[in-house]
Image (cartoon, rainbow, N blue to C red):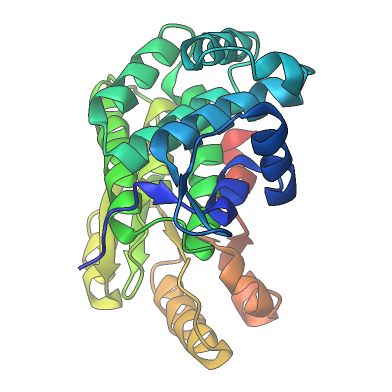
Length: 298
C-alpha cells in the first residue's frame, strides 16, 4: 500500500514551489526560513507546514517582496499577505497552491472554501479554465516526478468532477436552432474523463444537445445512437499512449463507422498527432491537441 506523502525532501520542495534547492538552502541557512527535521548531516525532512510556508513565500517573492522581509513575517502574516496578492489576479498561483495543499492533506473542506470564494466573483467555466486547468497541469508534473501518489490525484480529480456535475445539473434547458446532437465518449482503454465531462458542461451551457456516455465505449454500442438522432457530432478524447499501428487501426475502423451514418467526429488528444495528417482520416475527423483548441471556446 502507498504511504500518504506528508513529509518532503528538498527536491520535492523544488518541484512544488519552483524555487531551486540551492536557493532554499541559502534561505534556510541565512534567514532561518524553514525548520526541517535533520535525518543526518546531509538530509533534511520537511513538513507540510514547511511546504505551505515556502509556497506562500514563492508567491510573494515572485511579486517583488524581498526574502529578508518575508523571513520576518509569521506563518499567519505570510498566508494573509499571499492571499491579498491573489485577489489582484484570480489566476495567481495562490489558489493553485492552496488546492495543492488541500490535496496533500485530503482536505475537502479547504477545496470547497476556495471554490465558494471564487464562485462569488466568476462563473464556473472561468474558474475551471483559470484555476482548475493550471492545477491539473501542475499535478501532471508532480505525477511525472513521483511527488504524489494515485490517492492524491484521485482525491482532487473526484472533487473537481463533483463540481462539474453540480454545475451541469444547474443548467436550464435551452432551445437551440442547432439540431446536432453532440455525443461525448471515451474509447475502450481510455480512463481520463474529466476534460470530456467539462466539455459536456460547456456545450450544455451554450444550448447544445448532448449525450454523455463516459468511458470504455466500443463501436458496437455507438451504432445504437445512429438510429436515435438524425445528426450526430461524435467527440472523443485520447490520453493513453498507443503504438502507431493501434492508432491507425482505430481510426480506419472509426472512419468506416462514421461513413455509415454520414456523420463526423472531433478527436481531442496530442497522442493522435502523429497519425492525424492522413487524408483518409481528415474527411470525417477533425483533430485537436487539447480541449482549449475546440471551436466552442472561440
